[in-house]
Amino acid sequence: MDWDFCRYFIAVAEAGDYTGAARRLRSSHPTVSRKIAALEAQLGTRLFARTTEGLALTAQGRRFREQAEAMAAAASRAEAAVTARGAAARGIVKLSIGPTLAAHWLMPRMSAFLDSRRHIELELITHPFPVSVRRREADLVLRVFEAGDENLTGRKIGRLGVGFYASRDYAARRGLPEHRHDWRHHSVIGFADKATNTELGRWSDHVARHANVVMRCSSQSDMLAAARAGIGISVMSCFVGDSFADLVRVAPQKLAGLSDIWLLAHPDLVGLPAMREVIGFVTTSARADREMLRGG
Figure 1 (cartoon, one colour):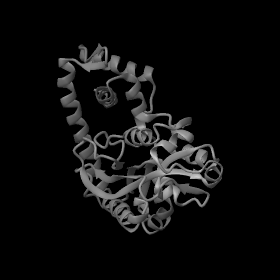
Figure 2 (cartoon, one colour):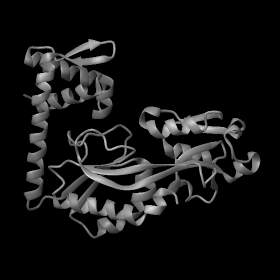
Figure 3 (cartoon, rainbow, N blue to C red):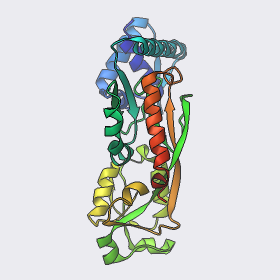
């Protein structure tokens, strides 16, 4: 059996539709549909049934999923064993991290780390769709808000502070909200895709619920640019907002939220030398920058 079929099957089973699976696989809806149809034809049975909520596994699909996930775990262990013992193999580590944390926090620290470890090749995955360590889409994941449900091993390495920021020009022109009723006189920049920023988007919408939303952006880098351009007030990580002299934080003593930062890995991979070094690097960096990440 073509392992690629199983990979597509697991993605559809987890996403519940072809579109979500295509995003996770960086593929297309027709390709995913074609792969599933070929797999069902090869097995001679239906694996999915259409419902009002998407695609649901049939009884045969549920049984096949158990075997497919066991195959994925075995493939992961085999790959890890070969990588760990290959005499000339480089230590390639795939780290899934949010683009804001990657660009504004970890990237400035990476040069010294990688210069001293020529045997490590670090692959950063910053696209917004959730990645799966079980499917080896990443080896390590840095998650904010919650640890997820993949039964990974790891721990909280810090806390991330978020707040509202505006340009000094905006503040000079319109002032800044100090009380809840003040927000109705202000312009806010919100999230265009709340699915990828659920907790942060919910908190932002709650605090600024009386404000006028003038723009929505699909990335926090665009929200930062919009705030610096004086378009409105935007929520952002405090360590980012505080690093720009042309931005000012709204109500810095009281209006802020804190979320846990989790560093997680597949239990079969965490003991690999390259993995241990990257885990140590990220953990040490978070410890050294604890107050900055909190927005203290």
